[in-house]
Amino acid sequence: MDMKTYVTEKASQAREGARALARALSGRKNDTLLDMARSLKKRSKELLAENKKDVYAAKEKGLSKALVDRLTLNEKRIDEMAKGLEEVAALPDPVGQITGMWRRPNGMSVGRMRVPIGVIGIIYESRPNVTADAAGLCLKAGNAVILRGGSEALHSNMAIVRVLRDSLKQNALHEGAITFIDTPDRGAIMEMLKLEGLIDLVIPRGGEALIRTVTENSRIPVLKHYKGVCHVFVDRDADLIMAEEICFNAKVQRPGTCNAMETMLVDEAVAEGFLPSMLKRFENAGVALRGCPKTLSLYPHITEVKEEDYYREYLDLILNVKVVGDVDEAIAHIAKYGSAHSDAIVTMNHERAMRFLREVDSSAVFVNASTRLNDGFQFGLGAEIGISTDKIHARGPMGLEELTCEKFIVLGDGQLRE
Image (cartoon, rainbow, N blue to C red; front, side, top):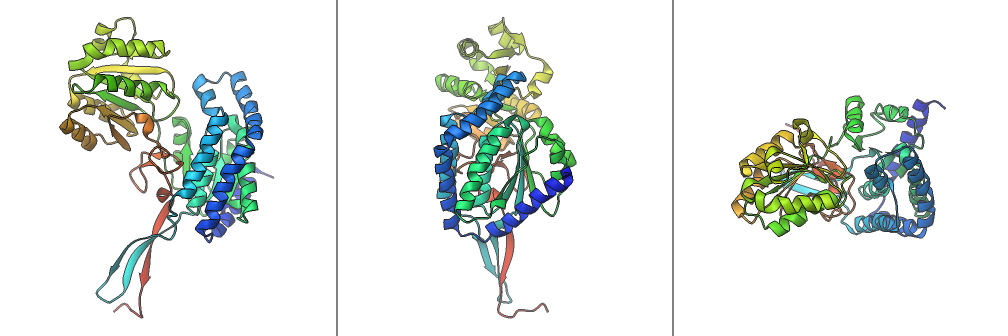
């Protein structure tokens, strides 16, 4: 079977699944999600055994520690996948919700109703948990999903899909609701992107190169973020103990994620009292530091930052450090170098905090909290399908409501156009 035929058949199965799933009642969907969660935990040994194959191959290929970390499953991460499905099951079902209704002078009522988007294609790299997150959210929102994970996670993803599809079957839901492209051939992606009419929306999750390739080649609408160049600004009125904890968490807790801090901005009024101990703590944690001239004057043995470094998404234990004159310079820096993803200010000054919230144009803006919290699970959305930096349809973590669209509904009693 050639690649075009193979991918088209997979998408056709997903389209059939979407039609069946759109009719499924909330109780059936919730029971299926809970069954999926139980099955993931029950079959964890099977999942871990398949994941070991991927991790071994990744290390043999010399992939970075950050990428290997994103790829690795353990009991805790499997439990987190299951918990995400349980939380999605507990959320209100958006499908069928009427979000507004008004009466026109001719007596008819006009409103909007939430409905599934249809078939959603997810193209992603490395992290196997995306398989469960995406499938669970799409199922609850009444959408079929067609998954194409990275070749480095093929065994892990196939094992997770087997578990999820078994639950679909056990709960009498169409197995096409979760469809997986099980070939590592990159040609499958290009064929997916041509299938307007079968696939309604594409969401790429991965590195900038993947996302740009998808965007440039897709005939289907794409929701995306290109990269996460995230900042934390330590203001002159910050609680410096709090600031140190937030900055450390934003960089070190899991550096290979899109919401990890890549540049730390520090108000010059507190730089001398804050930077030496903060930078030493970073170095002790293995962070490679790149500093501006003012930073080097306070901590001279680190590497000098280059202009192009401010645009980089490192996804690793590397951090830019810049001393700025005030909040205005911090906001201007973020506007120039940022990626509209996640940015934070640490301050006890209410007026400055509100300015930062209004003027920083990112998908999530934080006051006195780590950028690592820009996540659907942390925001109470259950699992998320991705973080969008687009401004149309969805922005920020994409939960259930963002996986539906609205249609107009009209209730009349014989009205005609005059």
